[in-house]
Length: 166
Image 1 (spheres, rainbow, N blue to C red):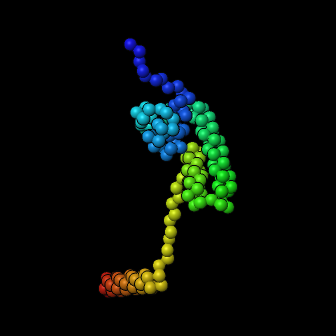
Image 2 (spheres, rainbow, N blue to C red; image 1 turned 90 degrees about the vertical axis):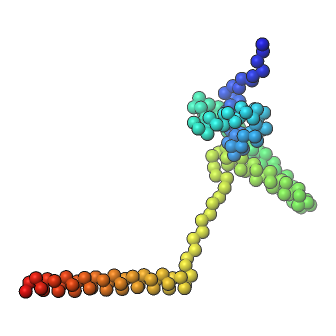
Image 3 (cartoon, helix red, strand yellow; image 1 turned 135 degrees about the vertical axis):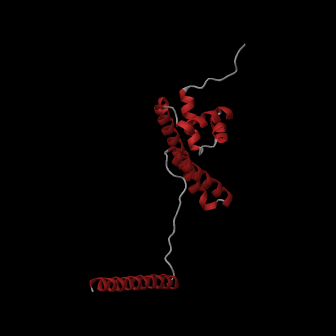
């Protein structure tokens, strides 16, 4: 009986790992791009999520990542050149499609290089004038209350010490 099972070598596993990372860890897309069956990619991805890629694949992964980034940079450059060519008399649909390709390639390059593809911005706002007045008023009131409490405690302690000394 002959087995139909495909044996995957280290080069194929490393190439699949690089594509998996470049595809933002989407198994179905990785399977489609690499030709490795979905179930196989899912099995490998589960291991990669848990333990990372096997150490013995490091060299092969670096090589594949370099080749992928190099190829993606060339495709992005070609898309940019085509976009520049089409700008004078292109329809919006053409420009939009090519700009999308440029963006996708840029994201894939950043993922393969281990860089962020999303930007999070935190915005801090200062309180309004009225809010500041309310805050400062509350702060001043609490200072006055603490000072009054301290003064009454001081008076009562001084009175006790006078009574004790008499």
